[in-house]
Image 1 (cartoon, rainbow, N blue to C red):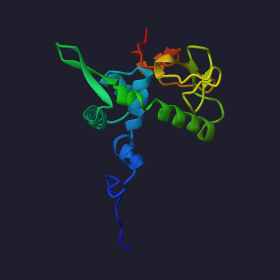
Image 2: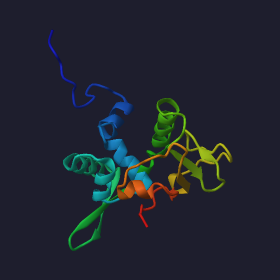
Image 3: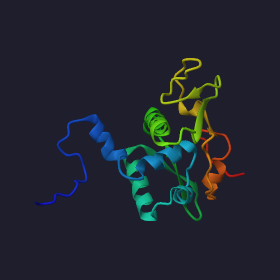
Image 4: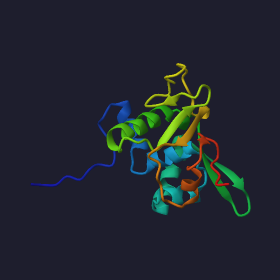
Amino acid sequence: MSRVGLGKNYEGQECSLARALELIGERWTFLVIRDAFYGVRRFGDFLAHLDMPRAVLSQRLQRLVEAGVMEKRRYQDSPPRDEYVLTEMGRDLWPALLALASWGERHLADGRPRRLFVHLGCGGHLTGSPVCPACGDQVPPESVEMRPGPGAESTREDPVSRALRRPHRLLEPLTEH
């Protein structure tokens, strides 16, 4: 019996989902996007929070920038330092991110959500969809505050994990203060 290795793409698949997975379906990529929604912008913060190899993070960020999902912005000239910010294309992943996170909470967790997504306009809790169940509004990520849920019991001590122990508006730069 011959072994056939997994291909690196979905060649031959005439499907928008396959094309999307080509870009965001690689290991670590969606977690980079998740952290960008949480307000992580700097390479070192992504690296510390995700515990991923430096070369892999560099490759994923470069691919997301090249594809237009993220934008690389210089925030310091000497020494040169850049931050990574979601573009409109990247922010359009908000419904998918929320749906997948809610699915994971519902089917793969202990029943106590780690994070709560609250519509700042009315206080409604978003679960699975960016449509607020309390007021019916379509809620963009800029109008969502992420709060620690009853299942948030992280013992991690990196700056991002510490900052995420407090309520935080999505897409705003994450600071530890």
